Length: 384
Ligand code: ATP
Image (cartoon, rainbow, N blue to C red; front, side, top):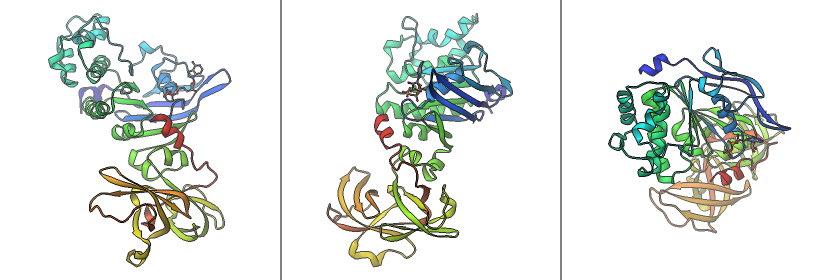
């Protein structure tokens, strides 16, 4: 355990926190616990309330209702500078006339600490910028400047570091590098990071826990793999990766639920349904594109028994290197997506080919059919 972990004072807990601007509610009353030492991401499309939530933790925004706790302590009424919390913004806001050492030392100097070298050196080492100590910010790349901003915040030994789209100004390749870098830094210092982003891949790469926000509410919270494998709403299913959603009617319910859809029967485990499964009721069946295999329509006999299967016709195929992505028209849904890894690149699945899509029923999830089937799709397009 690091020194900072030992001195850190607990979870961040939001109890009934909300924010309204006039008649508009940006954040609906929210109960949320960010465990101490975790890397926590608030993920959502533009305008969903994630920055407002972060700013209420920082004290930069006054909550309309609710309480912010840090450990056992109520910090709701503390001004930002009295909270053991620091924020790193997308605009690094480094001091252009100061070199990197002095930028990092700023917080210590402001508190009247004279001998800063040891702590600054430790921070320079942490963010791997030891060779750049005497440069000015404009002599660094965007990613390096962002690392200085992180070091400048961490030198104050906050209990919580808040990151507001910190990688938003970087190009894609640098973003990916910095994601791993930030994850390494968080693991090394062991303090709580709360990271705001609209980029689902970024949230999933870095965070232990992701809260998916939509319209001022947390739609679902969990570990990245859990959210991906077990989305409970169409918004989460569409916003985190791609989902095929097939509407059907429940035929029978036991430990498995059987659904009539697209002229056939599909099965899924009842424990994977987040909606009631009464016979005669409607259900949306979800299946991720990489879980589906394709067979030629005349190879139906080669498909193992017990797999879910629907018929279809390839309407588009895109070779993208690591995989081939197919769009398949099917009576089960207007267009279904299938991602096939390019292990043995085969030929023959050209547009027009009649196919059977088949998958393991255990990979299917069930959602409430009363939701908008396209919720979250546009948000992903906006965020991109
Ligand atoms: P983005 O990724 O675009 O920053 P966000 O999810 O962080 O989006 P917020 O900045 O939290 O969203 O804003 C949530 C909603 O509150 C938005 O609809 C925004 O227009 C609104 N809002 C934010 N600040 C104010 C304000 N000072 N006055 C009125 N409305 C505001």
